[in-house]
Length: 166
Image 1: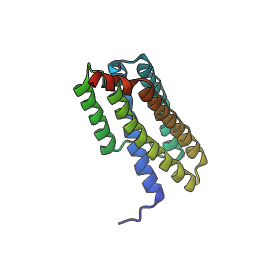
Image 2: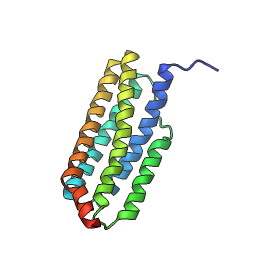
Image 3: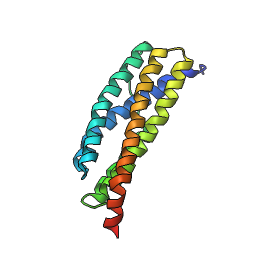
Image 4: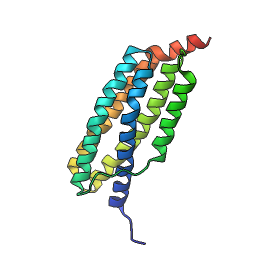
């Protein structure tokens, strides 16, 4: 078996997150349509637009490594998105829906934050600073999205869910 090093690990993880972003992109319009709060709808819409740019940046990272953009099935994101679908189905029309959508979206964001932080560091170690910069830009967007979702949960969605369940 050939020795697989950091470059191989980087490429494998890059393909994984490329798959994830493309599937997240397909899911965000459903979340936007399902959300009750206008602020949450706007957050999902904004993140959809950001995700399109994130995919373009990932494609640029592939190019920097002289690779074609390719996906690798990501069981983790498939599972997280499935959980989000279950929340949608189970809580549709309830006061807890937005809180559940936020929680599901944050699980995805936390996954992405972990992946992008790792990829950024590996790109630095592999000496591809431009790739690290592109990954940093996406990481920062994901962190801002997570912060916004936390704010929406704390200022409205959680309280609405609590009062509706009382």
